[in-house]
Amino acid sequence: MKQALSLLILITALLQLGARTWDHVTMLTIGYGAISIMAILISATFLWLWQVRATPLALGMSFSWAGSSLIMGGWWVAQLTGGAQFGVETEMMVVFLAFLATGAVLHFSVIQASFNLHGMAFLIPVGAAVLVAAASLGL
Image 1 (cartoon, one colour):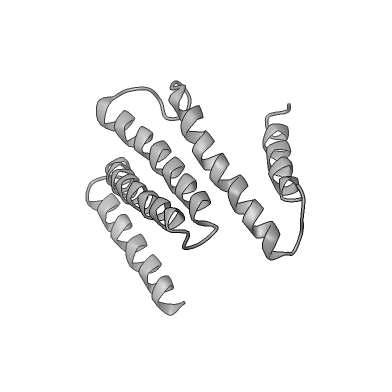
Image 2: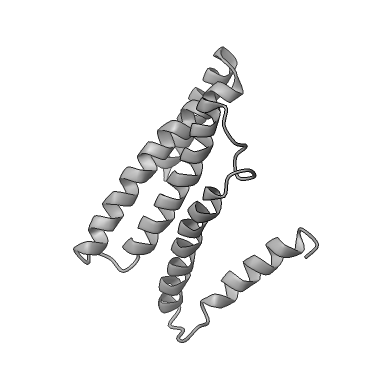
């Protein structure tokens, strides 16, 4: 726990130092690029773990990390190319979001088993999250 907290503090300090040296947009662009690359590598690792049947959560983790990588990578590429606004003007973001949503649903399915629940109970938090998000738009 101490090591993880120390790492968080160190990375936060480095990002803040970079933002003060250059600017926040530059640091976000570097950060999103780096994390996009790391996320796709993590996704590939989890896909391999799923293939060798190392853990039941591996496929959900692979989808989640792939979705994160694609969404952040989309933002990163848009920043580099002056392209579409992140998440608004590009329809591919909806496809990328599907990876994240699939990973989340798979996670809830595995979590359900940890609570010794059965059936479709894992869809309750999924549905609740969708309802709250839709309600925030007044839908």
